[in-house]
Length: 337
Image (cartoon, rainbow, N blue to C red):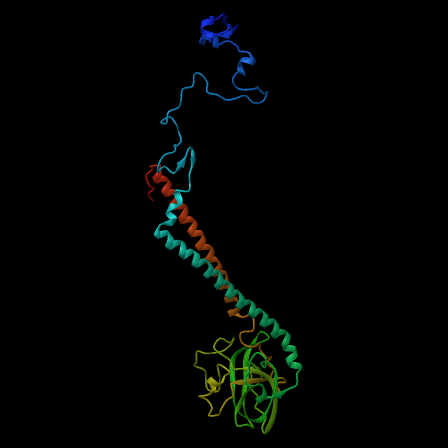
């Protein structure tokens, strides 16, 4: 519909000019030209048209808004949640204690786990070194016993030489060799120095009779070994053994059986006596991949799991506390379990 135009009076509008009279609501229903649509909004583009409130849209009241509006204590800025105020509970004395505990517990667990892992790696390295050194020890020349004492990781397994006369003989039961169960034949050698050396002359299968020890002066050569302990594989510590049997090869177990001054070491013969099988030398204590080594590995995993658990529980508590604080600000009732 064409726009109505009129000629204004000069006294009201100055020089005579054409002006556009206001459109009525009935006139506004008709089609409008592109020029009229673009009036007041700058140059029109094909893909973008300016947005403005329509004539029939009434202003929205605050009650009509679906989302929470900004206000003091609401924790919101406009329609976007303001999370900064929700987490202010982290500065309370109760949460200060929790945060300090977490900051101390996590590094402590990591340090302890790393220490246990280091012990396991040390056992692996010593086990490899013992395996490499076993062959070298056997190839070395036998040295006098007194030069190799006390027994340590360097001298354990080295060939030792001693002279003297055999004395009392014992059986060490429940010892396995190549998957078979039997006993060690242990004979005490009274050396020329006046002290007594336990000598394992060989391994004997179950049910067989131990041969008698050679008489007279003898010189023995065998691998030097440290005294057994409670943690050594195969030892019998429960007691109740019959006479003539020994549960553990050590000076402590022999002190009540013989009046001699016993060396805190023993040797296993390189070449066993007739009717016996030679017992190979064992690795030094705490140098093999035994149960203790894998216990260190297990403790490593436990400490690292503890560190992760502490961090997980902290995040869970923070999230639950933040949700409760947000519900209180919105006026929602607390959840009941």
